[in-house]
Each structure stands twice: as C-alpha cells, then as structure tokens.
Length: 143
Image (cartoon, rainbow, N blue to C red):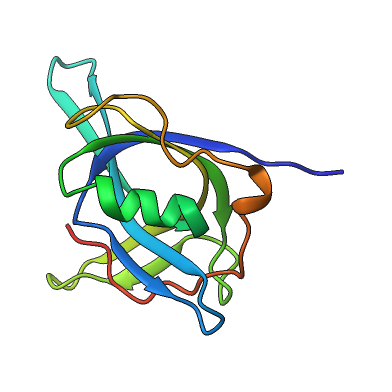
C-alpha cells in the first residue's frame, strides 16, 4: 500500500470559488501561497514562494467558501494531484512571459488559523465526505 500526505500553511491568494459538478457535488477551489525565508552565507536574505491550488469537496467545500477569504492564513492537509499531461506540477506562462509552476492539492482537512470566528478546524468532517471526482484546474494561480 502507498500513501502520501502533504501539509501546507500559507495565505489565500484570492477569495475561494465554489462550483458544482454535474451531479450537484459542491467543490471549492482556492490558491494558497507558502513562503520560506532564509539568510544566505553572505548575509543577504532569500525568499521563495510556492503556490498551491487547493480543492475542497462536499461539506468542506461549502464551509471553505463561506469562511475563507483572500489573505486569510490556513493550514491544509491533503494529497497532491499531478498534472495529467506531465505527471508533475502544473506549468504555465505568467503574464510577464516567465514559466511558472503550481501544485494541485486535494484537501482532506482545512484549519482556519487567523481571522473571524474561532480558530479551530471547520470542515474536517467525516472522511467519507472528503471524496469526489478528480478536479481539472480551470483558473490560473495569481501572483
């Protein structure tokens, strides 16, 4: 048996977008920017931002769409969904002509870390409620 689990903490790059599949299943998509900062040997500062496109399904999708908004900090646990064409991250060209990569993450748990209401987990729910068909990302990740 194989298993993967990815945990990210970052800030939403845009408001979540909820839609429904043909059978009426709610799915919410949102982008999360994760930042890593460090000091180089020469004393200069380095920074790296990695974007994840997150999809949440069913009750979790409804909760995420209701309570999350651009800029809000969130922890997401889930599994990576590889690009069907490459088997790796999704690659696209930004408006500046530079190649970009993003990672698609299917949420199994979302924890709201800051902002309105309580800071606990909402939408963790029943593990059987987290499934759904694979999503093909439709929107470009904002930079």
